[in-house]
Image (cartoon, rainbow, N blue to C red; front, top):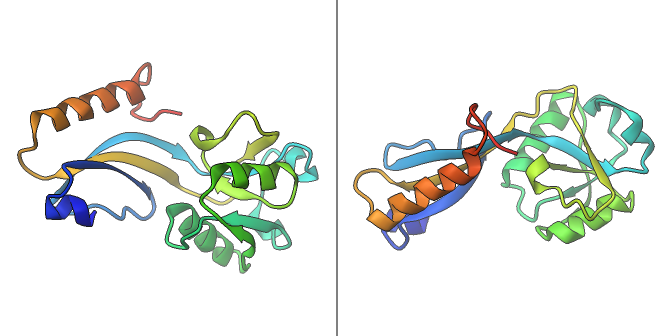
Length: 173
C-alpha cells in the first residue's frame, strides 16, 4: 500500500475480510474481484472430516497452521473466532508456504483457515464450514483514486472479466 500511495506502483491486489475492511480509504479505488467464505481445511482422513460443520467451541485441542504474520486476514479471523468461544489458538507452525500448509494439514498434523480458491487439489484435504460466522476473504484490484494509466484500466478490466465469468453475483471461486 505504501508503494501505491507513493506512486511507485500504479495498482495492486489486496486481500481483506468482509468483517474488517482494512483498505477502505478515500485515496484508494477498490475494484472487487472475488469474495468467498473462509472455511476450515483439514485432512480428509481426519475424524473431524465426517462433520458437515465444525464448531470452534469443540476445536480447543486442535493445532493450527497459521500465516507467518499474525496480521494476515485469515489469522485475524482465526483469533477473533477462537476468542469469541473462549478458546486460544494452539499454533503448530507459522508459514506462508502453501505447499507446507497443505502438506501439514493433509498429514493430519493441524488445521488451517482458508478459502476454496486457495485449496490445492493435489493434497488430500477437505474444507468444512464453521458454526460461527468466519466472514469472507475479499480480493480487490486497487489503484489510487483519480486518473490512472490506460494500461492499469486495461488490466483491471481483464481481471474483472476473468474473475466474474459466469458469475452474476460478483464473487467467484
